[in-house]
View 1: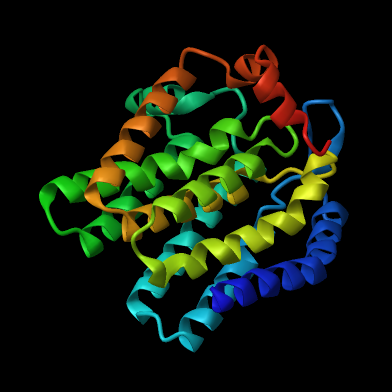
View 2 (view 1 turned 180 degrees about the vertical axis):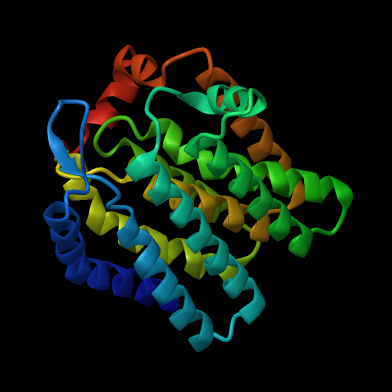
Length: 270
């Protein structure tokens, strides 16, 4: 636990030092977008997570002598997902929404940035699943887990702080049910980075963007695939499938607004 605590504090300190520079860089170069209150704020601030997570995972992975191949494959595809995410943030169409909408456009011969994200995310999930699977059932389960976790945070990234809160709850739940302690460092580093970013997000002064939500979700998915027993993988898989199906028919924002407990948790810290 000591090394996890050191990783958590290190991630918080480095993010505290680097976040103001990233924020100013995006703002000065016009990387802004109107939020739900119609105010222009920096978009793609989730890049802070990718940069710090990349550096810290490599550093602690080597210090702890964690299997290089596992860490390397994670950070390689983390950067790839972030790259696709930043493309979606900067030039993506806002007219087509939802997994169904992007897939329908793709089947009609039009590739949207969301469709590109789905393709790259699926291929990334497949490559990682092929690397770690022990059976065909586990291969399919890992593929679904990584793919749907990657999109999970994006489902809730509609109001200030909501995406980060969703990530933190999911991260703690995964840590509790995990059976692979070797890779806890991945989650503790991610938690440290997001804890420093959270206050800025709660005040609505920046937007995580797809670059951040994709990367955070991808981290959850990879950690889950690396460390869970098949029983827990199946449970998480079914839960994620239900969440994504419901998102096509119902607004999670409306559900949260109409539920006193969820509304209180959503407003907490604002």
